[in-house]
Length: 633
Image 1 (cartoon, helix red, strand yellow):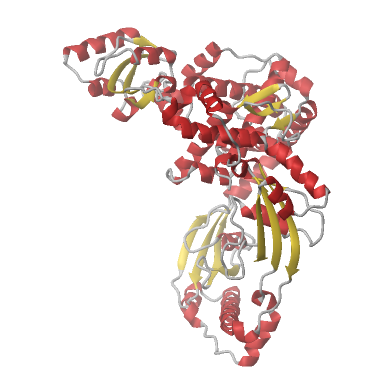
Image 2 (spheres, helix red, strand yellow; image 1 turned 30 degrees about the vertical axis):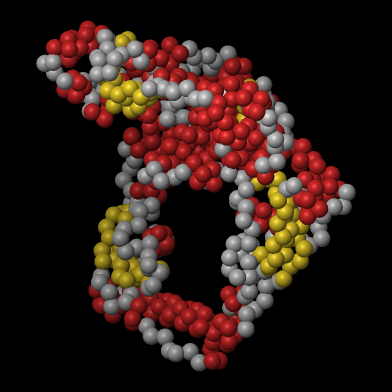
């Protein structure tokens, strides 16, 4: 496999991105000890290559922005951490680094110039006139949360993966019958008649005591108390350690000097930028702007840009995508228009509408903030030391409470805790971040057994003991009588609806007209044409469509309605086989099946890389990079 990749290095990239590789790394990668390998200032190490904290933070922010675009911007960074976006970002970087490392070994290399030319020629970045659109490119960068250099690096990784992908996919042959069968299965359509049964067509009799007690006994599992556990927990987190760390003013001032730039407020400018196809066009436009015959927005529209396209926002110099354009923008007076600036991707005119002066911080202003940050970093570095001390105490036979008192760690004793983290009063029992992680371990253990510490978010750890267990038991009938009655009536209504729908289906199978059956069902007869397997028209559920495609013409069936309050009866009126696939459809299915069939080759490639490279993750730096350590309780 790896030899084949060396030969494939001479083939220009295929059009299929190697996305499955990125996904698979999170599943198959062999991660080494979390406290070894990756050095300070890096979150992970792949072979001999370290993934720096800023690189990870950019990847995490990019993942977060992508999710925010999907949910309308409501997702916070804390929610992103809970969803595991930090791990997804890290998995992606690990995969990219591994492939890049292998590409280096194969002698694959793409210069910045090659990448830039590829971007300029990419139709995805073309404007209305078919040429490269700087405005469209900038809009994409803003959406992705990348600067220009970051995009070039990402593009280079994609191109290298495409080369490798081309080798894996290029040799995959897709059998013609498989293509035809998949097309026929997907494109076959059916015409269906359907009706929703009126739920009022069935009436449930008032249940007597005997019926209720039968339901109570037959469905005992629904009327049980939860399992309760008495547990003890010891929490080790940076936030717990931070309060006990003493820092002298001299140490703090030295720390501040080393990190002063992060506390300073840089100068920011609100910048507008118009891109032009060449310098001459830009120069002519500037003359018109200076003469006052046109305004900035008019010129932008002439170049195919909207007002939103040209507004870059309030930016610091470091936030500018192109350093050449940044230099020009930060030399301008307010409201002045620059000379034509030949940037890396386009020639532009720049205007500055607002200047927000920078401000250097003073030690006195940020002393408390710096102390908190420095203490947090020192606390993170002490996690391993305290981890070892807790383990020593456990091995010496000390209780968690005793260890907590000695090391000044948070100890929690909780009685009658449920798996849902509720106490007997229905209130939260254990108040720590991500208590569910610890509870899963607690409810998998048995009293008296030796337990392993649980790794918590932000590089924290929790030790626990299960002191006792109160098993589930059936609640008294009188206590749950109303619940039993509700459950009995609901079950009986479902049974009667199934019975009625079954009788209606039997009438259709016997040849009775659908309109007559629909009238007796108390609903309106509906008609759905050209229904495919992967589409559920209004009034029909996925289950109904799936069942309909298992029936012959004239066949009938029923399924639960979409609101789960009734049943839908349906009949297959027509079956229309798929037409022969067009060339375009054949090519699309062939490419899709080729990707699927290449999965085995992908996994073999991953396995080969996995045996060749080791991966280590620095959980301490990872927690610091996401700010998770600051939110530990």
